[in-house]
Structures are given as C-alpha cells and as structure tokens.
Image (cartoon, rainbow, N blue to C red; front, top):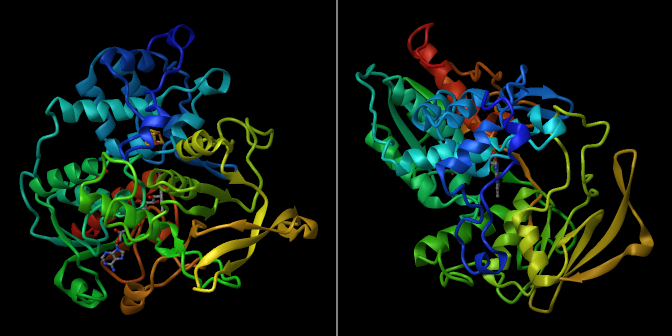
Length: 497
Ligand SMILES: Cc1cc2nc3c(=O)[nH]c(=O)nc-3n(C[C@H](O)[C@H](O)[C@H](O)COP(=O)(O)OP(=O)(O)OC[C@H]3O[C@@H](n4cnc5c(N)ncnc54)[C@H](O)[C@@H]3O)c2cc1C
Ligand code: SF4
C-alpha cells in the first residue's frame, strides 16, 4: 500500500524525455527512466491502499478493457518499492509478467487509467515503476538463466516470436517442455522488433531477453516460414503440441484511384525497413536515413494516413530520416482533452495524447501534424508514375458514416504516402492448411481462456486470435495459451498459472 499519506506528500513523476532537438538526430529511446532508487521509492509511496485496486483487474468496462490484463500485483509491488525491497518487488512483478522490460516501455498503462488515486489526483506511475524494477534487475545482475530442473520429454512448436510467442515459449519452457520457436523474420520479436521503432523500444532489450531464453533452453529457428519452408502439417506431426502466435499481419488498404502509383507504402513495411537498415548500417546513434534504407522520407513531403499510434511511429521515423514536411490525416475527430461524462473513471480514459512523434513534428515544422476529419479520395501521380499529390476532403460524421463536405475538397503535396490504417486479420496459409475455424473477423477461432482451436493439440494466441491489440494482451494470451497447452500435455492438470 505504499505510504499512508504518500499521495498527498509526493507529486507524480515519470522519467524525463530526451530533449527534442537532440533526440530527432538519432534513433535511441526517447523516454528515460528515473535516475535513482529513491525517485522510484517515492513513486511507490504514492500507492494509497485504496481498498479496491481496479488497476490489477483487466476487466471490460464501457468501450474497452481497463486495469492490467496480466493482473500485475500493482499495490503489492508498489508497497515493496516504497519499503526499498526492490528484489522482492521485482519477484512479485515477475509472478504475472515475464517481460516487464517490454511493458514498462510500451504499455499504454491500462492500470493507470483505472488507478483510484488518479480519480482525484494524478495516477500512480505504475508503468515507470515497472520499467525501473526490470532495468534494475538487469543492471544488478539478477537476470541470470534459470532453466527448468527437469524436462517432461514433450516437444512444443510455437509459431511466431512476437510478444505472445515469446511469453508462451517462456512459460512452456519453465514447465519443462522442449520448446522450438519458428519465426519467418531474420530477427525475433515480431512487432516488438519490426513494428515498434527503436525510439520506443531499444532492440537490444529484445535480443537480451531472447539470449536469456536460449540459455534457459528455448530453441529459436529464424528465417523459417511455416506453411512455406516447412508445412504446417509437418510441424503438427513432429511436435506434441503447436501454439500459433502469428499476429494479425494483413494491413488495411486504401483502394482509391491512383493506389498503384509508386511511393505509397504500408506502415509496417516502412517501419520494418527502417529498423533493418539501422541494424545493417549500425546507424542507431546517427541522424538521417541509414545508407541501405529502401523507403526513405529524406527531403520528401510525407503524408501518413491514420491517426493512431502506428501513424505516430511513422511520423517520428520520417522526422528522423529528414522529411521536408509531415502530415498525418485522420478520418475521425480528435479525442477530448479530459474524460467525457460518457467515459468515467475507472474506464480506460479516451483522451487526446500529444505523443512523441507529434511533439517532434510540431517542434520542427511549427504545427501539430494531425489533420482531423480528412478523407483521401484519390492519389495523383506525375508523368513517371510517382505519387505527387493527394486529393482530400473534409467529412462530417452522420449516423456513423463519413459524409464529404464538397466545398472543402483540396490537394496536398505528397512524395511519400504511408498507410497506417490498422490490420484486417491473420494470413491464410496455416489456417487453410490445418483447416482451422475462423471467427467473423477472420481471426483464428479459439475461446479466450482456453485458446484451443478446432484441431486437437493446436492452440492460438495474441493478435492472431483476438485481432490487432496490444503487447500486454499478446503476453496475457501467450501465457494463457501456454497454461492450456501444458494442461493438454499433462492430460488434465497444469503447473502453470
Ligand atoms: C507500428 C506498431 C506499433 C505498435 N506499438 C505498440 C505499443 O507501443 N504498445 C503496445 O502495447 N502495442 C503496440 N502495437 C501492437 C503490438 O505490437 C501487437 O499487438 C503485438 O505485437 C501482437 O503480438 P503477437 O505476438 O500476437 O504478434 P506479432 O507481434 O505480430 O508477431 C507475430 C510473429 O509471427 C511471425 N509469423 C507470422 N506468420 C508466420 C509463419 N507462417 N511462420 C513463422 N513465423 C510467422 C511474424 O513474422 C511475427 O514475427 C504496435 C503495433 C504496430 C504495428
Ligand atoms: S503491464 Fe501495462 S497495464 Fe499492466 S501494470 Fe504494467 S503498465 Fe500497467
């Protein structure tokens, strides 16, 4: 519970962000963590023994989940932090969260939206506390390999190494099963590696974790696409169980006139290309585009279609590559600056954020890059087939549909267009080969909590099962699928939480 009067005595504090002018000259992490144990201790002290800690529930209220989906024991670790018992606090955190170094960096902190202190004061800085605990454990040398004492003799294939696959593999390995993770990309991590930019999650953090998992006995086979390099049926017959964690990778397209022009790309292709080039050229600490970059924003007028977090990551990446201008188009309106009456505490707060990408674009180009209520009607090209303009129109929303306002039609200059409009579901190849049932959104059918598909011994988790979501949900699902897979392998009981 922290200190009785802590929330009255100490203000909320999070780690600082790096200076904008300096940080746009490299690709290193923007957010920084507290500088000392004492800073973290005072933040733990703010946890107020509220009686009903919604922060650890992960329940659905209103439009979305609120509280931690992993059910992290937030008041317990905050109390231990306040008492200076950092090792024990970390142990408590690890009970429910295998990779707090990921969530501590990129989680939108559903817990903080539900925090009781946040109803009247500022919420406890749970995410930063979690991040500090995990980095301290790595720094203090506490993160050493801890392989299982014995092996069960059962073999499990986990397909996909995103946060759901990693969480699942980690748990199954702890339970003593022999786990092989198959990943088609050249590096592990899924969207942790090739979606979320290095500025939010340093790629060394993922590689460090994967190395530890290897030392604990998990095998990673990279550059192997199941359904292509090895058939899904072969995997099914060579392993005792299979867990599918392949993500939701079909991007939503914008099929309007001119879509075939050169210079129009999906967000993940743009972001993946950037991270790959940073690795290939060891360019993380430098400004401008890495030399081997294929889709470059340098000197270009960049238009990003999609106002969500992926769009923000594209803004920040384009800024670093040296774009001449960056505009972000959103078809809906801005969220309110504070909770609306229809969105009361402890629901997840739907409020407008000024995220790192927008801050940076505003600093460099003098205005918020976001333009709201904008619909793109066509792409216009030059004589060489390159995109040069977008024809856009403002819309008003009537009965849930966007209606163009004719007199607002105009063109915007664009030499590079990034489509960041979300994802439509998993790819078909494995699902078709194994004849897996799909739900009405084309995700793999498997009940949450059971994670079983219609094929015996085959489980599904993460974005592949629930649709495009969050890292914390992917990890929650990966852990859940591991538990159910373990129950299947042990014929009815499980040693996993
Ligand atoms: C740009 C971007 C930024 C984001 N930022 C955040 C954020 O800040 N915070 C947050 O909480 N969430 C964020 N998200 C969402 C989050 O990254 C995803 O919800 C999460 O990664 C899903 O995890 P997953 O393991 O289910 O799938 P993924 O991370 O998509 O991993 C799936 C993996 O499976 C592999 N794979 C697919 N098919 C095969 C096959 N046939 N054989 C072998 N391997 C295969 C893929 O290569 C991939 O590595 C972001 C998403 C994007 C696109
Ligand atoms: S994982 Fe996310 S929601 Fe859960 S406690 Fe950490 S920051 Fe909060």
